[in-house]
Image: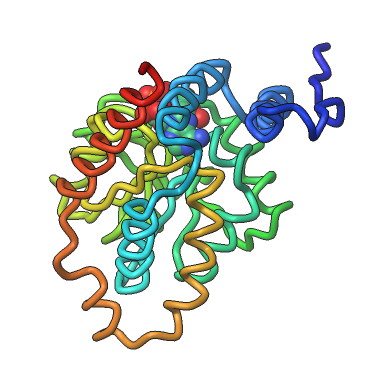
Length: 257
Ligand code: PTJ
């Protein structure tokens, strides 16, 4: 069995942090939490992160604040967790759900009952009190979604008014929006369909964005609703995404000079 390079990466290696993140995913793969396709998806994310300078931008920080305010204003917020998110940021996703009062739900593109259970157990080991998405008794379908992600929990994503879908694929955001839900995403690719369809897109790596969001949530949970509404009001997601693509192309021009 491949045992990975955990602990063998020198802190002096110029790409040590990036290599450590990869190893967390490989470990998740070994545990049956991450699918092999999740490793490829991470590679695509890494490329965009490289263009961004592997730093959280001012735009991403602003979008994260708006996203947290939106989750706090929601009546029934939910956070959707896939294999990559569970492997990369289990503590932070649990902490964010606690701070904003959101339901945590396992929802997979490559659906598998065994993996759902593994991910739910993993999240519980990282402090989650309740994880939805594994009990068939509460399972329902969103017909507009054309992947395994259509299977949702009646008490979680199905009932939610605001859903956070970090590191997402395909058509789900559009389908959730058609059902009248507000959608927040974290996606390193500002050009993806999800990034463009969401109400708020945080163009950042989940390994940076989720801890930042958990920190913001601690602060904003003390704010009154009027102040939260002021934070969400006037946010222009298209403008925010445009600023991100411009930043990436400026960096590309600089690198290729
Ligand atoms: O665990 P499952 O079955 O739900 O499957 C999860 C994956 C990620 C395999 C599935 O959702 C998938 O195939 O996703 P895509 O279509 O590859 O899209 C993932 C998006 O997330 C792409 O736009 C990537 O650029 C982006 N991405 C990848 N890694 C990160 C990321 N965004 C933020 N942080 C990352 N670490």
